[in-house]
Image 1 (tube, rainbow, N blue to C red):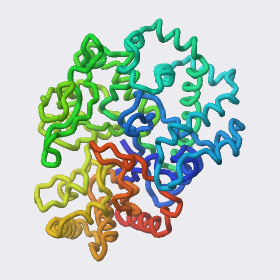
Image 2: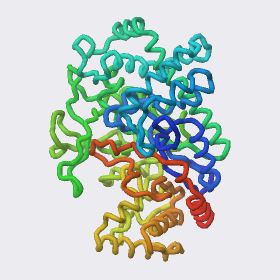
Image 3: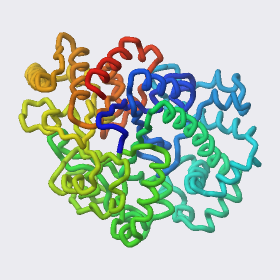
Length: 499
């Protein structure tokens, strides 16, 4: 999958990058981050999904499987292209807190700025005309046109004659609102121009880009609207069952995600054509692809539609290895976290994909905890934490006295085994000890979230699952966070543990 036996990378979403205009973009700060990775000796940049976000601002809940987040289009790049004037963007309100993305203001103001740029764009540009004709992002542009005309309400709340898709309706909407349709096509065209330049620059520096593919799609998506046969819907295109997680030690109600469930019988009859296209499309964008909620391929938890929580549900066997036949050679990483039983382990083994070990889960006093480096094997990716975890600094500060002592005792024992210098005189040094331990682990790849590299506390948490909050997906970094102290720590650790 990768170029040598021991590699390392950093988890850092595009949205978190520094810069003006309210959110991280594909502009100069993205290139600076590539330089930072190359400087410290990191080889992989793991991003979250690049999809357009919707209600809740999560990149895992998108109105389109392949629609790319036009908030990431760099406004300074558009100024350089002559599509915008500096004064048209410098006084636009994108929020006053440089550490937080204000998605409400982005929603109100970003699209208007992009439409000004599109108004100056040469729509007779041959490359653009060919792009529109190719139609790869046609469904996205059509659906966003429809949503725009409906005040961005979900499709299942539209008036009845438009709630059920028809080719005739699609043709009429595009003909009547062609400029709006072309605008959404252009957002994808411009995104890809900027992204491909970034990827070429990264690859030229020896940095691979790693993407993330959600297992499920949002109900309010073009796929659910236009291709209901892909899902377990009734005759009125309402879900019969939805996705979630059963109750556990952490949540007595379980997690009610609400995503529609795939019609796997239909998928199998079509030779998994839609899935094959989806995976191939992601691997055109990324050098490596992580599949989120991989266990849902082995078996998935279903909850009756209309339920208020996830207490009453049923496990149903998924497509398993059938979905990945002929794809075992692909550079895929399986997010095998959560309730992991024998069928999931068997699927991981048959696919050959690396699974994940998370050190935040490892040091609980259990000798057989398989997240420990001493229990890990080469064909895994070692993380200190994921986008759904607290930063380690926050996790440590929230442990009670007994939990903290257990954590320290376990870490110290692992450090002795892997010849890592143990330091616990401060939470920061304990975090850095764990980061070093991740580099020392036998796993062939180690990924550390930027929040554990700095390190930051609770304020830098990317996401708290099942909690709707403006603190989710909104933290941003500043240029000063990429300090000499951070650079030197990474350089020395990566070199010391031969990553």
